[in-house]
Image (cartoon, rainbow, N blue to C red; front, side):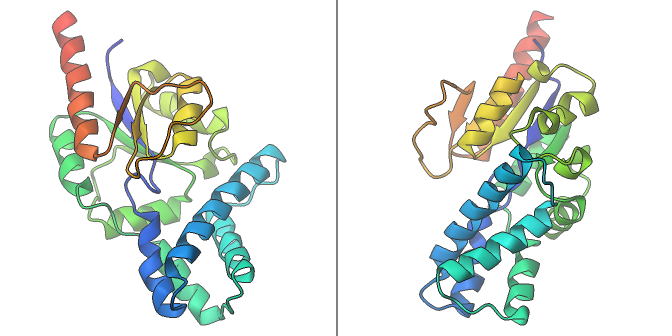
Length: 232
């Protein structure tokens, strides 16, 4: 099948969720990295519990709730001002260093691109703007539209519905192994951007390609497109 588009996960894939640790360390000396890790784990856990139980709250609320839990767990007093600073920083997470250049390369190659994320539209718009990525993406797809988080099929279905082609003609890119499993089961071609050298999930899923840099994603996507063009 030809490759017609790419859909990117946002958090951890384009935007560094652990960059929040520097501010957390400033506010809670000695605990910054731990706070960033527990906060992320609890955030994802809450998306799963809410989706499984049909108790949707948007990703901004989920992220706040996960932060409250994290500080309680680690015995840290979270003032309203500190919470506002951390949440504000989360809305402007740093993009990984190679992101802008690689996405501009794909944009120049006229390969349609989308973000497909659990984030709210406001969170994603702010992150994209802060990273200097305005105008790069053809679509920004939020789980808010279907009120179910990934790995629910309804969330992944936004990709083919938006691009107007089968999931198998879209490359889905994520740093999260669980996200790659859900996207593969849904029918996407998948690239696992394994930034942290993690072991593969034990769910019987093998992505189409695994790499450690977004540049490898671009190389793979453009090679797929060129191969299909030659066959055609």
